[in-house]
Length: 219
View 1 (spheres, rainbow, N blue to C red):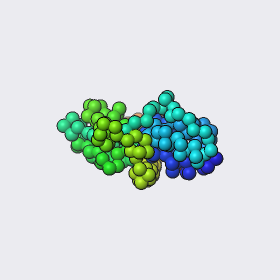
View 2 (view 1 turned 60 degrees about the horizontal axis):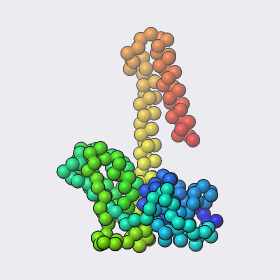
View 3 (view 1 turned 180 degrees about the horizontal axis):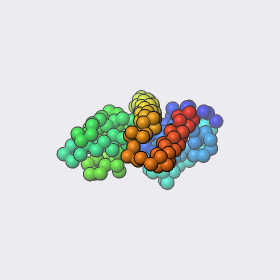
View 4 (view 1 turned 30 degrees about the horizontal axis):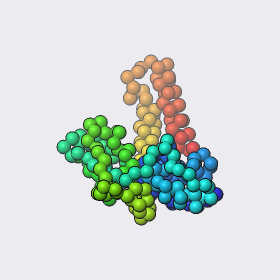
């Protein structure tokens, strides 16, 4: 069995989660571990199954109906007149293909959109629709509609996003820890409580929270 990186390199990198895993890399690791089949990726379609079968030596099989069907690639389009700038679609996009700021209209970067559809259900005003990426009565599907350079670029953008989110979470936790430590050091003057026993109880709560935060960071 090849390693997870080799398998991941053959996946379309739409990061759509239809395979049942949070991203393409996780699906690749599950295949290596024997926890997932090679037929669970609708964006890759039948050609994707053939590629994985050739690499892994596992037998080809029809695409799993439980995970979806092979179809034409789609693009997300935001109705600018309805967009309220909530940023939920930005947070949902696995490849940072949506730009915008809070309370301002958002826009999809068409060249970067993988058609994962994850932005659609989170929109509270239903202003996102999916349109065919390629015109025609019989548009291509699977790998015929998605090139290896596009997949490689999507994998890179997803990697950048993952690093950014991890860094942002670490910075957020550092700020919270600093605030808690400052409050602990100045608890008597910062709190409305005056009874010593009540202050001790609150101090214990803050100390326990700080201990958990330190344990998470060390872990």
